[in-house]
Length: 250
Ligand code: 13P
Image 1 (tube, protein in one colour):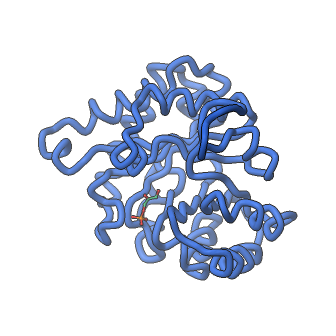
Image 2 (tube, rainbow, N blue to C red):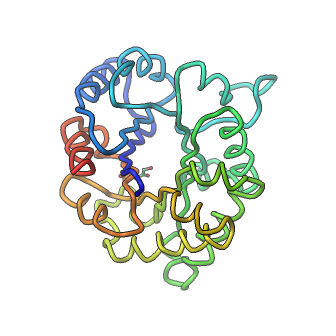
């Protein structure tokens, strides 16, 4: 039985005061049979460590550089994240791929560096509107999963998380339908089966992301291959975010 996971990606939102208010509200979430993760910007991670300590909520980063330390101006290592109590790190978000030119090869290095530091990667994959129209969804997602996880052991693969985030549904206000999301998440699970075998494909958690909110989250959670959600905009609204976590526990 896979434990549901509700994860929030704040993206580049939340100054010090906004982060404090949001983290204090999230700290009030009640424990249950689901995991709750928030990924604030780097600048709010120390606040997360302070305000979420001894709560059900865990925290992570939205990005990382795959070296432990050194002359990489402006970058943050997995070891630095770990020292702030981070247990999670988003890798390969489509905004990083599109706006910052991240390649599958770089994302793969990030996934491995995050695993080596003992953190859990959330590997994001997903097709653009054009790729979907051209019937390329399955091949794009398969390539991103296989390349992103190249060289990862079965034991590591079982404990990481994959988020299917179709680019056309992100920030669009219009999510994929639950059936569309389930179809691709089931392909991802099949891909994990081919790469790592039955045990891993049965254990790995696969999330859907893209315009998830308090009204539609339950539709996704009902699907057999969707184990939770990666939430952008709605994760900035504390009450709605916690209500989605409460749905996942039920
Ligand atoms: P929205 O929930 O705002 O569509 O963002 C999804 C996302 O990109 C999460 O990583």
